[in-house]
Length: 102
Image 1: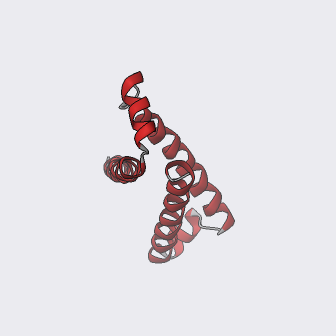
Image 2: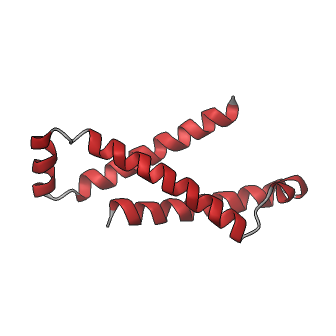
């Protein structure tokens, strides 16, 4: 239950961050096109789904590459938390750069 709550909070934070960056960097021509075609609200939602999928994929890849496993979690929880937070932050920056700021 607590893991779902944390996951939901992280998803909300990522959505807000993506929306802020997306909204501030949106060219006027693209804004007009999205509004006139009725996709203004669905486009950020689609972008969020893509971002979540890409984020999970990158996090899994980084955890394997850096050997951040459940074994490390059992041995040294603080090191595991630091490693996972580090991976998450780097992966989030990659996703934002790839999908939002492209």
